[in-house]
Image (cartoon, rainbow over all chains, first blue to last red; front, side, top):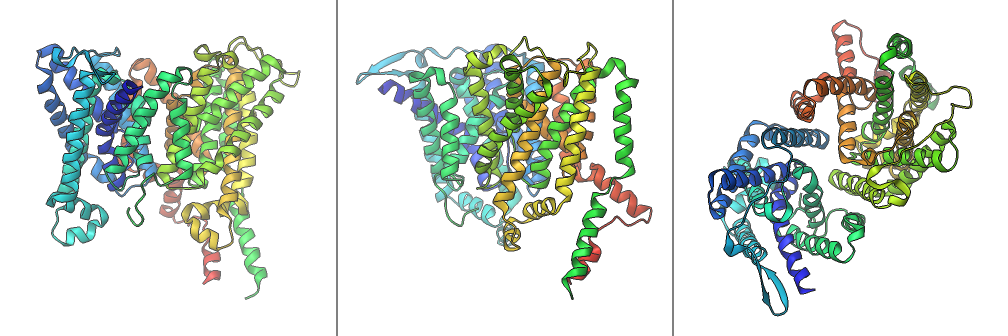
Length: 286
Length: 343
């Protein structure tokens, strides 16, 4: 019971790191980016290649995955995404689905369609017993890391200058520009940060979620659930939604394996009917 | 100003919009001719006709009601499974099966239409997506009914209305699909060119303003969503009946994405978009899967990205004809007299 709760929290934390970039692009920049999973996949594959081909330590792979995905995100933002901020949602959906298709086929071409495996450092594998709960070391590592990241994100967004600049740029780009805030630079940075976090999540998730070319499509629904249920007006909303989803998914798979992903979808639809704007909707926000 | 001339103007406007154009006649003659001119391509042609019907059904909600759907395959798949199960357990007569499958998909559409009435584009996207994933999961789990991952096979289809037997080359199949597509298009044409269709466009532009004009958005959206589901169900049933097989693939996500691409390729909001898109898409895919059998998805993705970046509107055939008209000096028929009257 406690083990399931623990695994669920680890899973939820991981989902949050994967999805929080999407919460920013989707919620704050109002861009329906279905290709978010592709950035996560990029991070995952960077880790796999670095570890298995060049034998680099897992701990160095994590920042590498972050940087690679962030750079990829920044390049794509400047060259492609930027043109579509004002486009209709249909255009954005088509564009990002197109990107996902290209990513899936491209990775299949270069890396092959099989599941990718990595071997974790010995101190992260295995489990130990604490207060009657079986605790996986790697899951504990994920929880601690993701919790630190979340706190850092939250403080950055609410306490620092760049955070308030971002909120200003999002709430009203024109006025923010008028106040001397360089909105496009802020957007590039934010997009890169979101993609980088997705890449980090992808790297962390190789062991937990698995990694194959269909990753962006397989986990798209989870990212979207986190963002739609959590609402997009804050970081806390998606965070709680991710935790809920993680626990519900792990518990559902454990107790009712025959129903599979059924519960998740049903719960999501129920939520969307009751709270179409998300669980934690801020009145007046955009 | 008396209400009479305005009404006459309005109905004249509607009639002019609803008139059959020469290009349309040409298209259908070509489509019919293909049944005899391309005997070796009948299966591909049936595929095009089915995809065209599916895309047209999506056009009804995306192009006319402005509801973004990422889960339209739900209705297609339900229609396909319904047709398969009906022919296995009830009757192998295709017309009855077709109508019943459409009705079943329509019921599902009616039930789920209430989910797309609220919330933003994103919420609608997620609910439609969620519903289709839910149904896909259900079909996968209920193996006793649907055959699970293996799908339904061993479906035998009787001759259509007891008269026309399905032949090996698929000519009957193609003519059957084409007839259904034609009938569906004629009905859809009537509907979207009626005041009802105009009111849908008003809702798409601005639902709050439409409500102020006395149009009830919710009821109309429910109606058109249900109709769209019926059409998608027809398309699914046609697929089952012409291929005698149902695979769980009919409910897959990529089908919902593909049909959106098809519709966008042809252009949104004038019914023929789905048909034209289906021709382009199927030919493109057939060609790509010969050139790069494993990686055709990449090129489809590239087409999507390029399409959006270039701007869908610029390559939309409806806009193109309007553009050609203005260039050649013939003004496109518009609502100008009506607008003047309003002023």
